[in-house]
Amino acid sequence: MRRYVTLFTLSTVFSVLALAKSWQGKLVDNACYEQKKSAATCDATSATTAFALFVSTQAFKLDDAGNAKAADALKSRADRSSDPTKPASAQVMAKITGTKDGENLKVETIELQ
Image 1: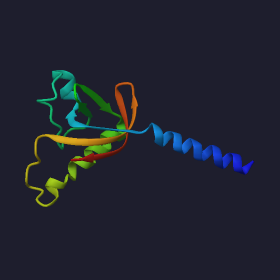
Image 2: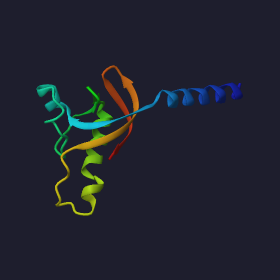
Image 3: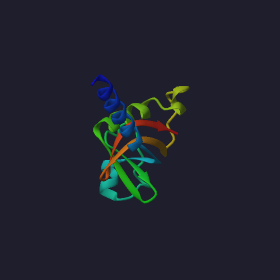
């Protein structure tokens, strides 16, 4: 019985990992994007609380955990770590690993580029 439980647990873990995908695109302010429907004028800033990832011609909203991870990553960006007084570059590119839930992304990891 113990062997079956272990096998079931391992197969569940591997199937969840197999569902995870990666998306790469521009991190934008979701509230601004929903109003203007344009990613060109809605760059994410350190004051942004709701984010979306704009990939090609589609925007994917981040879940609550993803919003928190994006905010933390944005505040500790590599281009600001050496000089915090230096303004961050306007455009923020990101690589997100997670699962797609309709038009939303359930974020596992986020990496700013």
